[in-house]
Length: 86
Image (tube, rainbow, N blue to C red; front, side, top):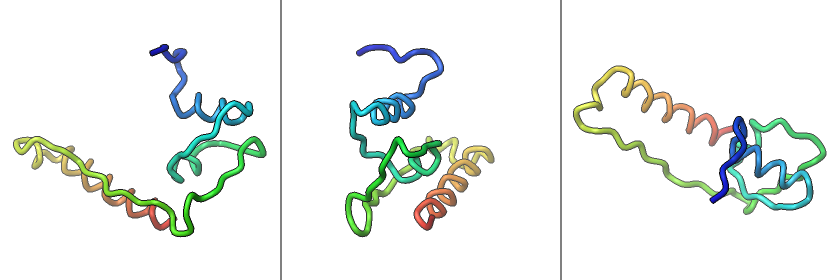
C-alpha cells in the first residue's frame, strides 16, 4: 500500500479525488460537515432516514475508572448524541 504524503489525512485525499472528478465517496455526515467545501462537492443522503451504527469503546477493566478514561468515554457519548441530532 502506498504511503500518504506527510501532513495529508486519508479524508483529505478522498475529498481531493472527488473534487477532481476522479472519485465518489461515501462519508459520515459529520466528516462532510467538518470539511471545508464549496461547489466542488454535491452531497446526497443514502437513504431518507440516513444510516446509523452503534459505536463501542473498549477499555481495560483496570483503566475504566481512571478520570481521563472516564472523561473520554463520557465525552465521546455526548458528542455522538450531538452529531446524530445535528
